[in-house]
Length: 253
View (cartoon, rainbow, N blue to C red):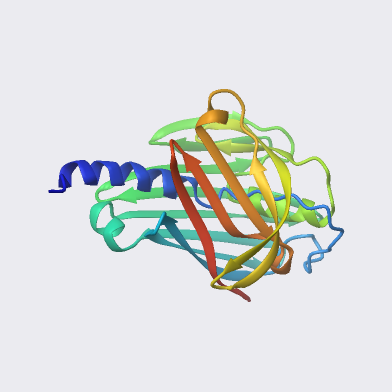
């Protein structure tokens, strides 16, 4: 007989890893392709992704990018479905908005809200010049930022811009959970990826981690030129568990 308490505990751990690792999008490209937006960003779009562990579907992720003049808004919403919804009820909202100045992306506000039943884990920040002021788990913080610092969501847009410009160095500073963290990426070659949204020629990109995390966690992305270097597949491995995110549909707005 299945031990329901143990199953729920294990599933909660799996779901937490899955949904907190989703859409940490990275990209690297050797092509000289120019993205349609004159500022190097992807076109406005909406897309849906499925999230699974092995053959078990955990949930769905919806993403959208919109522009209004020199302003942008990038939103993502992830919700557990099926058994995952029954056992965890996890929902994740991640939003970023800001201004465009030439080829620069300047974030203004960032919000990450992971809710489970009656509990929430919130990371929010406001960007004011060289400082980011916010709170994580209700603990306030203020950090001084190097030039070009992004939040975790706007980082995806910066990467798309830099790929379109064929930049060789992809290293970024990101405000995350009250700290300044550094993201590094490495390209692993081109692959053909089959998805419910179609077949894509995509570049395989790996997050480069250092220290103990290097052995414990691995995140790989497949970014397709056809949809402005947005991810068509993400695979996150941690402690032997593999979480896969795959695009289901994509539409330009």
